[in-house]
Image: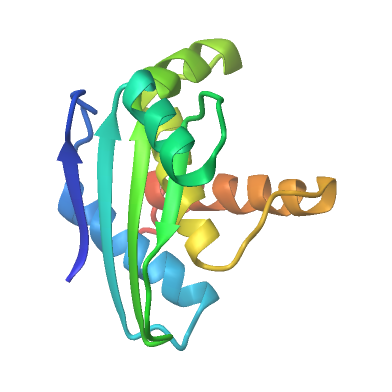
Length: 146
């Protein structure tokens, strides 16, 4: 199945969704070879909608750019719901001096990398996560030529 992308309250402006879905499937399987099937649902939301998800499900009263829920019941089939604030992505892109499309993909890859087993709570984990995001961005936007 792979990935599905839904613009809920916001238009994500995400393009080439099939190619991205295939890339995410391969990215996750590269870290977790036991995964035979990925079933990811990406929901693009407003800041306020994601804040409410954060309050309701995680008891956090803070804005965030992404919340990832692993719904898997079987190690061979990865099922997840990933909520992304398109507004927060746009603001972060401006704050970090990058374009919206790059930041959007970084956040999408960030969610997939969490599902692949990477963490970002400690400084060392965050550094590894950032390197993995950078590698994913590079591989996605600059694929090797055949």
